[in-house]
Image (cartoon, rainbow, N blue to C red; front, side, top):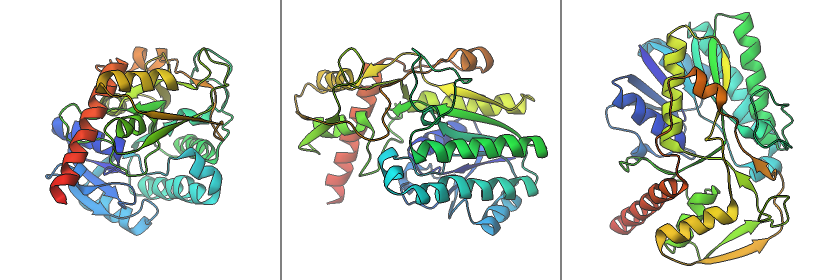
Length: 331
């Protein structure tokens, strides 16, 4: 029995791979390396370079590696990019997911975990967002993920396929053992950007909008440590293996932090001040997104270990410093 992890050389996917390997699972990674890195994948893991939209390749992997479950991370994830290139996002996120599902079902795979996003909710007017909240995405990224969710529901009804959809809120931090972290050079994640600025990799960072209806005027997000998120996927896989029914879970901590609060945390943990430039709002950004996490905590055998913002920031800073050392050593 092998778990196929698509996008397993990426930020979140690589943490999932490490969690599975730590648990003694047989793992195969499929990644086209457009944003992923081989060095994030532990050595014993079987790696295949390629696309989830390549039906013959995916079918061959499932047959040769005896794949019984798929954890599907592979996707394009930058909201502003999706607004500039909507068709590219629908192609990579939705059409490739369709191809993956079709191939997996025909090959007999009956368990799948799908990496989704809180962006499917769009703009909300509640203190926290429940899984039953309306899904009205305001970006092609969110829409591309929602379309994939709909396909999953329909495929699950038509075929013997059980799935768990995990809607991430804001993922941050790095593996506490420093085996993996966010390595994409042009990443837009707030905590990574702030940490890069703190160590001097960037001359300054930008804040997009200070006129939102929030206490300090900046956007509020529910930040979840990437290692806690990986463990949520493992818990979801165990749930499916026990015969759990298809369902959707929010992945967050149930509380938010503003952009300025995050920047203050990075300055405090790094001990460094750095330049912050205030700009206008960015298209596709809701004022606040905080998860209602009652369902995941009552259903899965999962409890977060790193839900303190300072801990998340400390791990992210340590990873950025490690990346800087790697770059210096390679120069």
